[in-house]
Image (cartoon, rainbow, N blue to C red; front, side):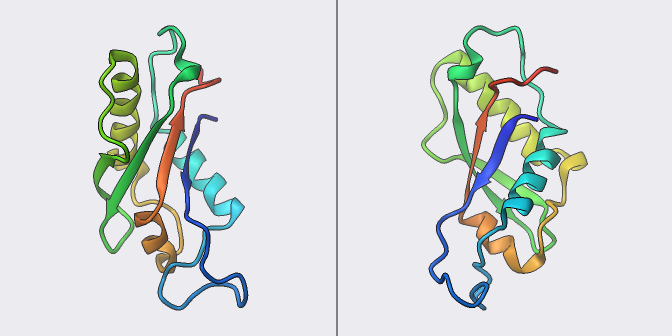
Amino acid sequence: PPNGRPNPPPSASSAGGGAPTGTAALTAGEIRGLAEQIGECWNVDAGAPNLSDIVVELRVQLDGQGNVRNVVAANGAPADARSRAVYESARRALLSPQCNPLKVPAAKLPTLMASTFRFNPRGLVR
């Protein structure tokens, strides 16, 4: 599957299994599940040259049910055409009705809002 998964910030508390503020870290299984869910909706031009060199990072805004409502580039929208194409395809995947709501526990939705989703089309064949 594509390498598009959230990169959650480190948990502030390592004891007790998560903070009550809704910022509990995602488990490795939850991250893998999100990558697979979003990967099903992500399509890039596999014929474009040097795609494996491109990484785009996105931030999401969610509603209370885990539906992605807005996607922004974490470091500004890419300027070059190839990176811009990967950015746009990743953005479409995150906003796709087929990939929403995101499948994570409701208590961890704030974690996603504070996470960066990193997309790299390396090895992606569609």
